[in-house]
Amino acid sequence: MGLGKNKRPLDNDSMAFLFVLLLSWNVSAGEPDNFSARRDSRAVVANAEINKAINGVLDMNLQEFPAKFGCDRKKFLDFVQDDLDRNLPQVYKAVYVNAPVAGPRFAREVPYRAGRPYTDLYFSQSYKVNIKGQTFYIGLDKIDHFFAHGATYWDMVGQDPALPKDKVKKALEVGVLQEQATWGLQRPGVKSYADLSANYQGLYFWRDLFDGKPAIALCQNGRFVKNREFKIEDYFVPSMDETINCNSYADQEMYQAITTVTKKWGQKCPAVEGLCEEMKSKNGEFASLLLHPRCLGTGTSQVEKASAMTTKDVLDTAQAVMGGGANYLLFKLFGEKKGQGVR
Image (cartoon, rainbow, N blue to C red; front, side):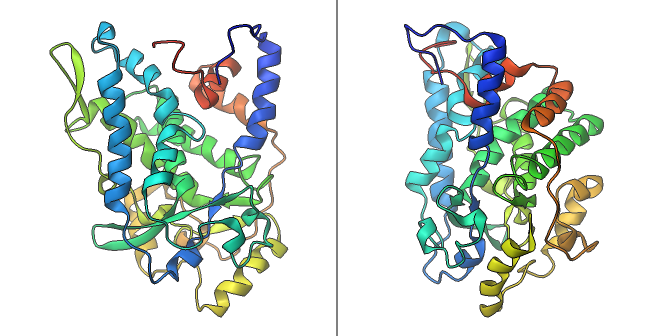
């Protein structure tokens, strides 16, 4: 969100206030209508188009990264901020333009848009994917969560490729706090466990970028080059689908507005038998921080009370884990134009 040439920089207090003000609106990322997407008989699997869009953004960054910085990891991570690691990064737009949509294209097409999470402000399109023989649906918002929120988790674990369990757990706990507060139950009225799953899967992308086995990017002849293609098949999982890893809602009215329609369609959540057991096994000790009680088999209610935490409260908690400050998180989520900084 860089400053214009004639703009006076904000002081720390002003930046922190602006951060909270902007974040309170922008973090209310839309939730997809995966139920309607499941009824779209014309929907096609979008794996190839999503992969092409994401690899295009990665390739562009690898090609344009200034040679003078060589194989400086920190400089490269700073460089890709605008395209991969922001609230609604450029990669989000690349998928939006290129991938075929499943289900409603616009909020007005959602049959239960009277429910608050499906207003024009909060709606997100869906995509049909097939991973290891399993077909499920992800929202465009999950691309944002995968890259941008996954990068925040990566910072919370200290960019340690060993992914220490204690640090990973703290990052996941911050994600839960976000969904219980302004990011979820407070403002759009939805706690998306699928968002939490997408955040977590994104952590592995950032680990794999330089430290994967094999890494996505390697240093060769003094600069980073693509070592392997990014494939959603390596990262996306059924728990990123909101009809499998169910949502919770802030009130009964909202929940009823949705289920009144889905019951007519003969749909329920979880929509596919057996996948929750697989996700429980995959996530192990972290399952309770990533999966809805319906998916865990520990509860049936899809109504949860929002926490009383403010955006600042959540940020303070995140900063304590991350070791950064208000200005750091302002930069991480909204950034500055690429004409500044490492460019």
